[in-house]
Image: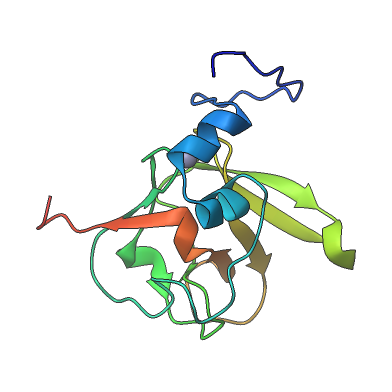
Length: 146
Ligand SMILES: [Zn+2]
């Protein structure tokens, strides 16, 4: 397969692959969430109830996105963070699908879908934001293991 696919979407992502390349690199479920903006079922993901320390990387490109220090228990069924690891590691898009007005969160490096961010839900966190992220979009790397 070396026919280049025409990607008409303009993107400033540093890591760019065609759909075919992503399909090869990811499992079908990872592809569905990361590249087709799917959502894993709540309470089914790997990290929604994880308290292990470490860095959460983008499962598609390995870019560092969140850390366990900003993770908190929102009991929503998905891993929740009150801030990304650093400004510029994620980017935001307006998402008006499914009859809702939401802000989508994507990896700034490879433009993969991560989840959504919600404001003002009254959580006792420094930002009052909840980055509601699919476990399958992330990979937790424990510094002691690497
Ligand atoms: Zn990425």
